[in-house]
Image (tube, rainbow, N blue to C red; front, side, top):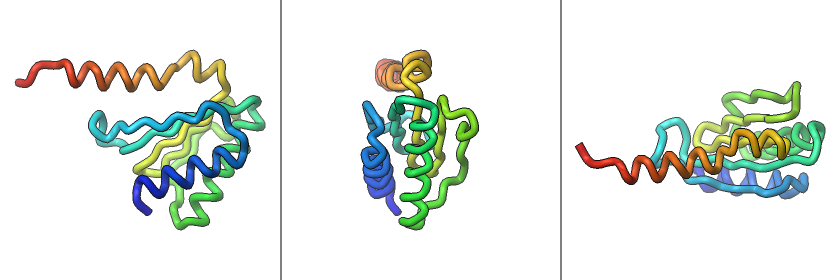
Length: 117
């Protein structure tokens, strides 16, 4: 599956589970780790786990197995590594604290503003 196809599958899986505030960040120009980050919120630790598990199940059905999953036990922040797409499902308080959207937008502005060699 291509990165856009994986992203669409992830978004559909999150929407099916009523995840909130879904944000897609294109980070391909900022890191070689992944092309896209998808960040979403759940209303409880159970909701976070369920949304992440649905992402995993839907991707597996499409032939895309995660290379790693972290945080399913706790449920405050679950990371699903789909190689070209990283999925973060978080409780709102955790999302506010780490503020990944701002972190990655600052990285984009910093790299764009830095002078060439």
